[in-house]
Length: 293
Image (cartoon, rainbow, N blue to C red; front, side, top):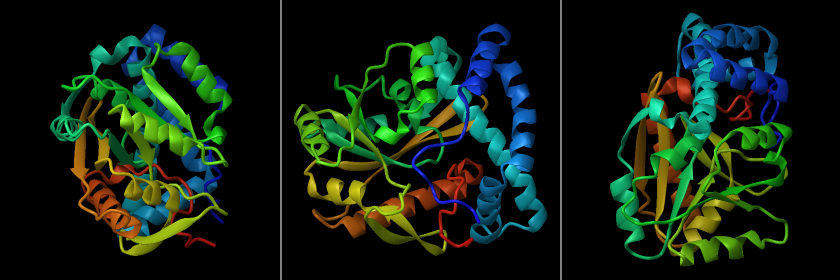
């Protein structure tokens, strides 16, 4: 049985240290080469995630069996590249990457309303490098990311120790809901708040919506909260085009105030559009559709 998402991703600090060391001393091209072997390892020794991603290619995208099997390997490889890109960009190597942004104008327009802006993304592409891509906004603003305590792992602590000082603020989700006051304060300062909306944790509240032809559970919080606030809501993705080039996409929500289900429907449609264009950049390696039990 493919496992449900438990609130954290796989990996070891040692593995990340090896990649960071190799990147600094051998360069990105050499580290990308190492990924060929790492991706093969995960194909054979990560049974649950391989089963989940096979289901995505075979059942949701309707790939042939052979194409689905090959795509498992490609998916692991591209995922590894996005992790390395994130490390490189945050460690002072951002000048080695290029990007085209379809986001800046939309965000600039939203910030001119002085209500801040909410960006909802997914584990599709590499949105974690958005700080670098959002550096050319017309309005001088800060970026806050809504996250959970469980995501504060030893890996994250290590990555924080090797990257340049970030201008991104973290808003920790708390059981007493005090994070809502922090979000409201950030929006009142005309700042950007980033949320991911695609990982439901068992036992928490959820909403159901169709994605790639089958209903799936989505965390209710991001959509209920975003639909109740009066800030503009946008769906934003940073997609890897080639080894060192990204494209950013954005779509503004048209859902009515306090209509969380309509907001989720728009979000699912935007994710579907991205996956049709970049099928290998779906990085939810668990039983997302709850269909493998």
